[in-house]
Amino acid sequence: MYSSEMQVRVRYAETDQMNVVYHGNYAQYFEVGRVESLRQLGLSYKELEATGVIMPVIEWTAKFLRPAHYDDLLTVKTSLRELPAGHRIEFHQEVYNESGRLLTTGKVVLYFLRRANMEKTNMPEEMKERLAPYFIPGGDQPSTV
Image 1 (cartoon, one colour):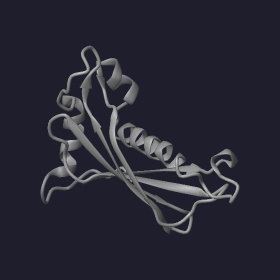
Image 2 (cartoon, helix red, strand yellow):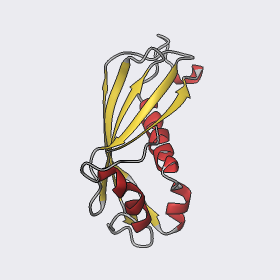
Image 3 (cartoon, rainbow, N blue to C red):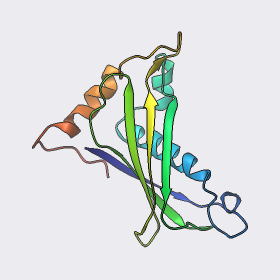
């Protein structure tokens, strides 16, 4: 399993009149978590797109357990539970507050597409090479957390 963490502080504009993070902002928190998880692998989303591969979101789900509030420091944990095969990648995400309490869980599914014709393609080889060590049964996986 591959896992990474990053932090984000809740801005005032991300909250509603009840001082609670508006649910739609979690899509952005999840996106930052995914982009940073790839960066921690040494991959840049921008460079990936420059090779002609794009990754549109095709499914997004979230379960809200507890609220986050203005100025909370959130930890977004992003995991790949299995090595992606083919054209599909599935990120599992969790958001925690500063006390370590789980606030939100979710899943985001993306496809690998060729930008030129919008056709499905396999995961880029460089990404596969960087992720593979985390999925060796019984092996010593590198840590990014």
